Length: 308
Image (cartoon, rainbow, N blue to C red; front, side, top):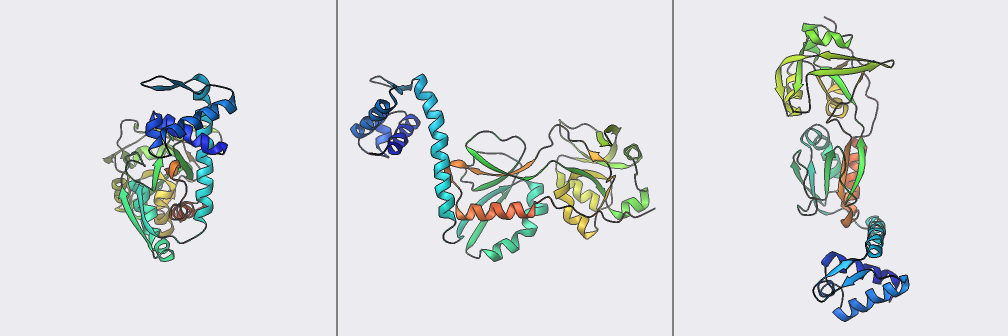
C-alpha cells in the first residue's frame, strides 16, 4: 500500500477519533491499524497514543497531522481544478452574496453569465451574515474583511477604496465641495453602525484632514444610503464598486476625486470564498472567474460635475 494512502488513513483516524470510525469509510479496523503502524514505522516516530477507550496525538503526531492535512488538501484542490477544466458547467450553484455587492454589481451582470452557461441554475441568498459554508452547503460567498482559516479558499475581488458621491441634482442645489471642510455644510448620508462615527477622513499629498459631518438620513444598510443619494437627498461615501455603474450612467458623480478617503475600522477588502475541502469545481471556477471580471479594478472615468 502506498505512503499517501497510509497518510490519508491517518488523517481519517484523527478526524473521526478512532480506528473503528475511520474503518467505516476506509476498510477494516485491522487494516486501518496496520496502515497507521506502517506509517509510524516509516517515520520512526509514534503518532498516536492508544488506550482501550481513546486515541490522542503525540507531539510528533500533531505536527505531522498539521503539515500533511494542508498537503492533502492542496492535492485534492489541484486534482479538482484539473477535472474542472473538463466537462460542462451545469447543476445548481448556491451562492451567498453581500447585499450591496450582490444588488449593485453581481445581479445586474448575471444575465450574461447565465447566457454562457444555460445548464446552470444559480440559487442566490443576499445577506451580510457570515456562516459555515460547508454546513449550509454554500458553493461561493462574498465576504468583506479578515479571513478565518485554511478551511476557506479566497480570491480578492476588490481593494478597500471608497469615494465621495452624490447626484447631479443635489450638487446643483447645494454646490460642489472642493475640499473636505466643505462637507460640514452639506447633508451627509451616514452609515449608522457602532464602529463608525461622524468624522470623515481624507489624505492628499501626504497630509490628512478630518471633517465632522451630519445629515438627516442614517442607516446601517448601504442600499438605503445609495437610494437616498440617487434621490438627491445628500452626499455619501461608498466603496467604488458599489456606485460604479451609477457613475458611468451619470446618475451619480464623484467629488473630491483628488483626495483619498482614508480607510477606517470596518473597511475591508472584498473576497470570493469557497470551502477548501470541496476543491474548485467547474461551476465554482466559472462563477469565481465571472466575479473577478465584474469586480476588476478598472479606472472609472470621472463624470462631469454640475456647477451650481
